[in-house]
Each structure stands twice: as C-alpha cells, then as structure tokens.
Image: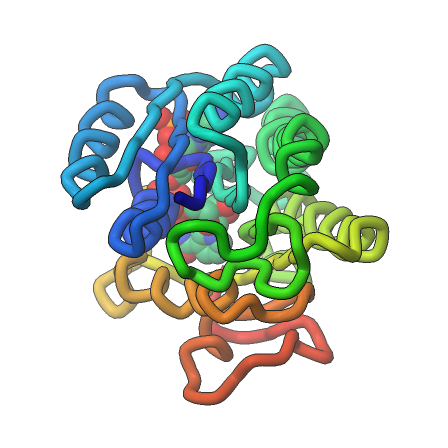
Length: 261
Ligand SMILES: NC(=O)c1ccc[n+]([C@@H]2O[C@H](COP(=O)([O-])OP(=O)(O)OC[C@H]3O[C@@H](n4cnc5c(N)ncnc54)[C@H](OP(=O)(O)O)[C@@H]3O)[C@@H](O)[C@H]2O)c1
C-alpha cells in the first residue's frame, strides 16, 4: 500500500485531496489542529475499503507534532506522498499591508512556510526510501524510485492583489523553497500547485463580504490536482486550472495567473 500524509485535512481542499487518495486505496496520515473535526473526517476516510487512516491532531508549526506525524507514517510502513496543504491567512479578514498585524505575518510564515519545510526535512528519509508506485498502482513517482511532495500554493504568490500581501508572501516563499527542493532532490517528485479560488472556510474568512457562490467546491478541484500523483507528472509549478484541461501535463513555463488565490 502507498502511504500519504495530508496536512489541513479536516476540511476544505485538504479533506477533498485526502478523499481522492482514499478512493484510490492510499493509506493516510491526516492532521489539523481541531481534534473533533479531524476525527470526523478520518472516520469518513476510513470507510474506503482496505484503507488505514491515522489521525494525529496538532499544529504543523510544532516540531514535536511534525515528528509525531512522520512516526505515524513510519508505523504505516513509510511515506510515498507528503501533501503540505494546511494554511492560514495571517489576518482575518485580510487587511492592507499598512494594517497587517506583524504577529499574524509571523504565524502565517510558521504555518505556511516553516512547518511545511520542517515536515519535508523530517520526512525526507522516508520519501527517499519510497518505492515507485508501491501498492496502490497509482504511478506516484513512477520511474523516480522515490516519493513525492505536493505543496499547495496560490496565485497570490505571483500576483499583487491588494490585501493579499502577507499571505501571498508566504506562498511566494513556499514556491521558491519547492523549486529549490526539486533541484536538490531530483529523485523526488516536487509539485507546487495553485488550486485557484474555492468555496472554503479560508476564502470566507479572507473577504467576508464576498459572494462565494460562483466558486468551485474543493471537491471539484481536487481531482485535477490528483493528476500530478496518478500520472507521476514532472516536478514543477502547476495550476489546477491547467491540470483540469485535457492533455495538460507539463509544468507551467510561467507561474500560472488567473483563477484565484
Ligand atoms: N480557498 C481558496 O480559495 C484557496 C486558493 C488558493 C490556495 N489555497 C490554499 O489551499 C490550502 C487549503 O485551503 P482551504 O481553503 O481548504 O482552507 P480551510 O478551509 O481554512 O482549511 C484549512 C485546513 O488547514 C488546517 N490548519 C490550519 N492551520 C493549521 C495548523 N497550524 N496546523 C495544522 N493544520 C492547520 C485547518 O484545520 P484547523 O483549523 O483545525 O487546524 C483545516 O483543516 C491552503 O494552503 C490555502 O492557502 C486556498
């Protein structure tokens, strides 16, 4: 069986990605801070036939928690895929940089940048040891002989939207760390992907007055992102919009624009 770890899996995009993986037979380690919502999600995920789900509640900005997550993956047999999805805005609702609380910026860097890199560091021995496409027949990392990392980005990483500056700075930092990781660990697949705007709790908290009715649910976006895994696409930056288009299978030459934050 292949094993994936999904952070921020209790709701929104993380939950949708974990659901797609469970439906394909992946064993899962899932995390979020809120233990009750995480436990509910984990029991739903575990309804998929033959799927083992380990839920470990905690904060990805804690080194102890990251070590516990990787220990949970080791107990399931290893780690083939790390999905760094958990994210925070740094201010709710979003505000211009002139009013950005610096403590919120620090927290956003801890959760969106430091935590994900810390998890990569902790998980690298397992990811390097992962067998290509083991068990679930997913083709994850096919031909690479090692595991994969999917870091969830945003188009706020590359576009100067007013009020999205602090959050966007964390996503830009995550993109660069992802790109360098792909260079330094060529045996791994490293994808950083912009899901586009979605109808989630984060989006509602960002701009409370906005009507989100026209945005896709994360369950509509997750299948496009899963193409990275199921098709073992090359390391690089992707957008869900491009991945959702038939035949798209190369990383964006230019960082994707349009379609969301
Ligand atoms: N929604 C959009 O339109 C959009 C667009 C572009 C990119 N994104 C990105 O997509 C990802 C998912 O966003 P979403 O909209 O699905 O957000 P969401 O609905 O707010 O869900 C965020 C998830 O992350 C968890 N989380 C937050 N802080 C955490 C922490 N410190 N440690 C562990 N878990 C934590 C949350 O649970 P707890 O609060 O219980 O911890 C929850 O499970 C994020 O990286 C976001 O930046 C979203």
